[in-house]
Image: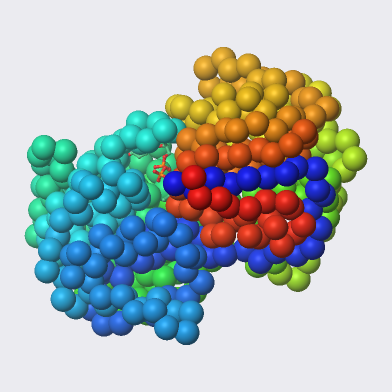
Length: 418
Ligand code: EPZ
């Protein structure tokens, strides 16, 4: 178990390059199951979750090669259709194996992903939609057993815009018989990135990025070469870091249209933001204004940046309200922020934050991926010594060498073995 140690108080200065998107890379890697041959993927981030999905797929018989910055994937010899509990429990996104395996092989046995710290995380909408496409799905001792002849296209309406649900159904529909229409589909950029990869494989998809996606089934797909989009949540984390430390950083390799809601809120908080040729220049204000946010599906404020924004509001100049509308339990970072001196009251899915002049260093414990980032941001400005963030295996699931990137911007931060 490692911990990250931070000596706060340094304004961040310099430039940082954003890695490939975890939440785009995961479905793009599982989409390689849809056809044989060697797929060639680039800008894949070096993360625990990527290693997890590769180990599950390797156990099924998929071959991976890494060379010259490419990840090559070949599923010609897939021999097993089971994603076991002991691996799925470490990464819920394993549910993204269900759609492609069912579409290609007609059967799949995927451990039902349990809940996690931020919520129950059901997959009922995935299963309901696949059933409407003709799959027979049984739940058996914690596993999803799914069988299907050729899946048939149909009209599907998602009760809630689900990101991985939309992605699973995209992968299931690309070789289904006839036309599939996904209504109330998720509009996240990661969904668009998957659709672009599927089109590179020969799929017929229109409307990705809107709430209605039309897929016309094709008979054959081919292996593709594809570069994954940059990680907008990592980019947003660094933008908030530049503001909270009152620094000035240039963030390379990120897209403004992926972060419109955050940009608007950071400008309201007093930050200076300027677009550059491949990203942003972010300059923190002397006084951080308090700003209310409500998390929503894209293009609303991303729930994956809520914990990081709360750290920022903890040192803003007044009261702010944060409403978490996507997940039912995504305030677990609050108790740890309070240990650093933050004044936060929770009432259901609303958190009322009273901004403080300063936070104070203390040992804290990460509880989930984005909470880890929130505690590191708070540690970067905490006074009076060293902040230690424990259980940072959560962080390593979704951020590539985050402490090294912060250190390159002048932060006094390092990793220690516990
Ligand atoms: C994806 O999770 C992301 N993960 C999450 O990022 C992100 O927070 C989330 O989308 C929302 O943007 C990946 O892409 C791998 P949802 P996902 O299905 O697809 C409910 C991170 O930190 N729901 O869009 O699991 C659900 O409970 C992670 O990188 C159902 O009720 O989220 C939630 O309230 C955390 N039934 C809402 O919909 C279902 O069948 C949105 O969830 C599916 C979802």
